[in-house]
Image 1 (tube, rainbow, N blue to C red):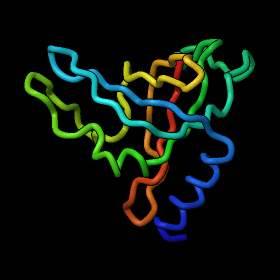
Image 2 (image 1 turned 135 degrees about the horizontal axis):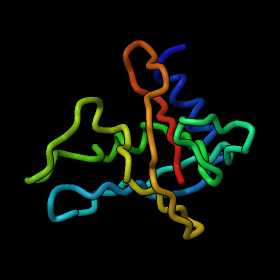
Image 3 (image 1 turned 30 degrees about the vertical axis):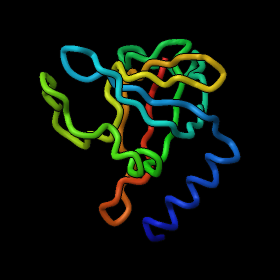
Image 4 (image 1 turned 90 degrees about the vertical axis):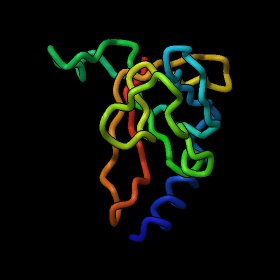
Length: 131
């Protein structure tokens, strides 16, 4: 599957099963918000039997999936503002503490995020644990 086909399939799934949200990162010492509107699919609230001691997962945490389509189109998060030191890795992947603001008004905080396997080197999907 090509990266374009994989992204299109993911975007179709998110348009049907996802919900509108805004991903927000606070940059620099002034905590300037940088946001991007996107679709997110909250896959599952972790059940007690899925929580492994020492994993950091807790009841109330959920797995979420987003596409890089909107992130790429908006060039989110953009260039680092003064006073921010970017951690290693792809800056498009949400960081611990970034916030998902759902259209319903609910707010979820990113606990961890990771790249799904890339396709021909292209980042298509990002998965997160949110609380």
